[in-house]
Image 1 (cartoon, rainbow, N blue to C red):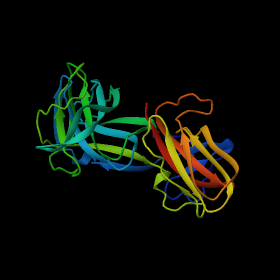
Image 2: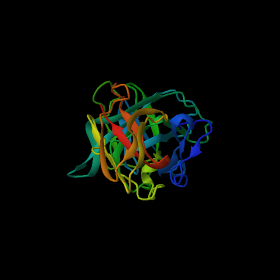
Image 3: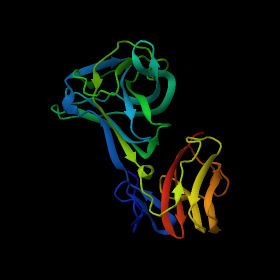
Image 4: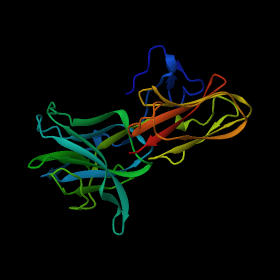
Length: 306
């Protein structure tokens, strides 16, 4: 979770849908309005066992591009388990025979290990990977999450025989290097759905109504981007305008426009992925906000890749 600065004021018109806030000194804080997919541990009626770095995972449909957390579970017995677990997210492809499958080598996330998760011997034990700042997927749509153990170890993951998650299928995968790197070798297909939950962090890009009448802020293109991207905004009449880029901690990293008078009509502004001093910024998610005549305007989101 990304903390809000002290004394934040809610951006006008955005409270109901995104909970973005403005902090003193121009900082833009963010809280996540969680949106989760997956199935609850109560659906777990079987166990999938993997060994020697083999993996088991699930194709899921991403409803947004920012992931706040991912959870999987192991059975209650044994109550003590110190085996490390690694979590990966890969791209997918549509196979000729079997629907959506994990794509070999297209690794987007390598998270872990999580170890020493002890339970009470009664309830399933949760393994929860938390991302602060949120992890940014390159697009919405289908991805594959894969849970693996280290070489020489056996791990158990809670699953369901009732196919409660209908948007994707489960797969076994096999290691290709170091015993815990995701491959796309199918040991068994199809298989029981994984018990998992993915929590997304919804942001202001979902806002339908803009707080400043007649002002528009289009999505930056391309997005994600590597070299530069163009942000377009429109004004119904001449106005004072600022267009600033913020990191996910809510701090200004670049001021793209600071104009005492911008004319009515469309404006295209290029951003090269650098900060105010000209230094390249790290890959990640950045927010940009348009302010018109000192009134908080719309907010967009850009994903910078390196």
